Length: 360
Image (tube, rainbow, N blue to C red; front, side):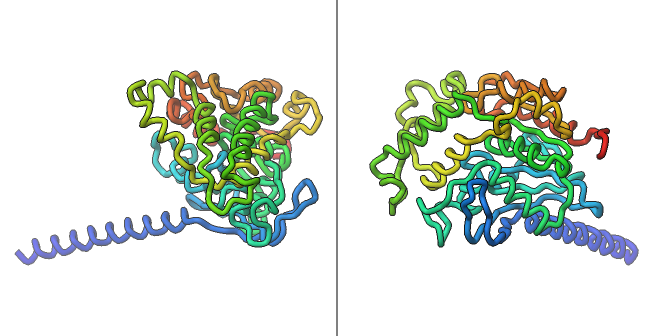
C-alpha cells in the first residue's frame, strides 16, 4: 500500500512539474509576443524631413539562435498592426501560420502610421497634420535600425509581408541586399500601378472630402462612411461579398461596413500616401533590378486582387527567375481567407530550403 502511495505521489509530482513547465512556457511565449517599443531618437526621412522622438513598435516570436541568423521579419499591412500578425507565427502548423517559430525567430513590425509606431495620431511634438509624410522605404529604414541597433542582428534569413507588408518586403530586398537572404512578398508590388494609385487616391479623397475630417484638424474621430465603403468594395471580389451576405441581409451588412474603423483618419491618409509614392525602382528598369538582385524570392499574388495589381510582382519573379504562385481564390486581396493552406505550405517550404548563392 505504501508503495502504491509512493507511486501516486511520484506521478503527482511529475504531473505538477509538467503543468508548471507548461505554465512557464506559456508565460515566456506571452512575454515574447508582448508589444515592444524601440526608441530611435530622430528618424531622418528620404525627403529630408525628420520624425522626432521616433518610435517603432515590434513583437518577437520564437528563439534567436546563437548565430543570430534565423530571423524572419514580417512588416504590418495597410491599416494593420503587429497584433494582427500574431496568428502568422507558431511552433505548430495551423491555417494561417507562415513562420515556424520552432525554427525561426520572428519579428513583427508596426509600420509608421499604424498608431503604434510614430504616427500623426500619437506624436506629441508633431501631431496630426504637422507629422511629416513618410514612404515605404522610410518604414524599412527605421525597422533596419531596430534590428541592428536594438536587437543587434547583422543578417536576416527572410522578410515576409502581405499587402503594404509586401511592398515593404520589396523595399527590404532592394535597400538591404546583403542583409536579407530571401524575400516573400505576398500581394505586394515593387511599384504601384495606375490602378493601385487610383484605389488609394479615391480613399484619400473620400476621407479628405468628409466634412468631419476638417482638413485633418478634427478633435473627434470622423466616421468616414464613404471611405469605409470604398475600402470594403476594393478589398475583395463581388463573388466573395455576395457570398458574405444575402440581399435581404444588406441593410444590416451595410451598417457593418460603414462602421468607424480602428485606425485614426490621419494615420490612414499618411499610410495611403506612402503607397502613392511606392516605387523601389526609382527610374531603373524593373527587369534589370530584379535580375541583378542577389536575394532569393518567392512571389505570391492574387489573380483577382483589386487592391494591388499582380503584374509588376509577376514581372519581377520572371526577371529574377524566382518561384511564383498565383492564387485563384475569390477572396482577392484577402488571400488568407480563401487560400491560407496553399500559401502557408509554399512559404514554410521556401523558408526551409537551402540557399546556394555566391558570397552568401
